[in-house]
Image (tube, rainbow, N blue to C red; front, side, top):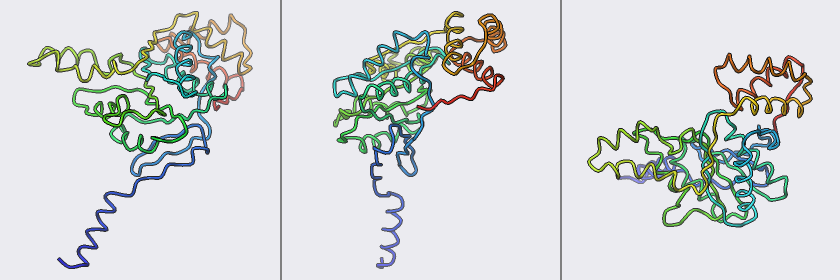
Length: 283
């Protein structure tokens, strides 16, 4: 084999296995998004979020998550957290609001959003963050796994870290509509058809046990729904009397067939537009 051929092979291998990405300038922002192909952490100058004081009906979860996050940001032991339950009840909004409140209280903390489909790359991400002076909240929204999904194996690298262990400067928060991160019918089907039913799903179900904090979110009451909207109105200066707000908000909820924090915000967005009020959601 000639030298030219060897050089072409070497060049091809370099293209297939590019050099490790350098860590970005973490002073550039407090929030980053992890991307792959190529691996990179992109800063997010302004995060789309609402203030923690506007999240109604989640007081216990708010206080627990805030205390845990403050501990971590101050260099103290803290747990990974799974926020699970009803759709549209502010799980991801709470994570982002807590992050903003921790920074407001003077505790430096970076948040890094990771997409579920990019979980196989999490080992490379942890290598970028490991040993840094900064502390990182790694966040994965809407996390769940299907029957033939192998991504859950990558999640263990975040929760347990293998031989190296999870970096001390990283904590992992995830939101999910499922308490055990997989459909209940899938759990039952695997148990009923497996030779050893207990072991068939233990590996996947045990993932949720690796989160030290389980915070449940449940459908909101009508009073909470109306309180959310009134809070938004007061915060953004949208003027409307209680009777009109109640009638319109309940009609809106009826047309959607559901009542949640997301529906409350969608109604308020429509109301603000009709009132000519612009909304600033960054913080």
